[in-house]
Image (cartoon, rainbow, N blue to C red; front, top):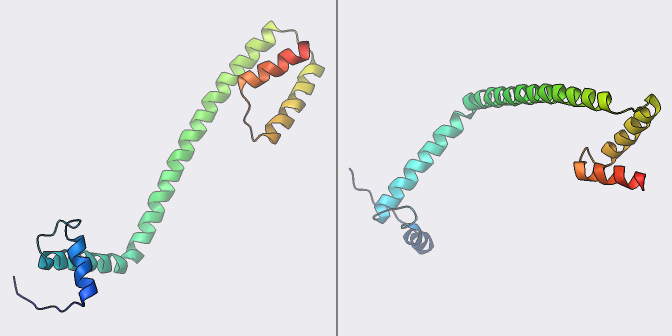
Length: 132
C-alpha cells in the first residue's frame, strides 16, 4: 500500500468519524478506501448501463411471460371447475331460462359495481333476503 495525504474540511472529517462504525471501518484511511472502492464500482456500473438495460428489459419480459402463462393456466383450471359446478347445480335445480337470464344480468351489474369482489356470504344473504 502507498501512503497518501488527503485534506478534509472539519465538517466532512466529523461526518466520516461519525459513520466509521456503520461502515465497519477501522480507521479514517480504511473508511476512505472503502468509499473510494464503492465509488469506482458505481462509476463502472454507470458506464455499463447501456449493456445492462437490454438485459434487464429481457429478464423482466421473460418474468412477465412466465407469470402470464401461470395465470392463464390457473384461469383455465378454474373455468373447468366452474363448468363442473354449473352443470351439477343445473342438474339438481329446476331453474328456467328467464331466471338464469335475470340472474346473469343482476350478477353482471353487481360485479361491475364492486370490481368483481363478491363473497359467498353476500350472495347467500341476497338469496335468503329474496325468500323472506
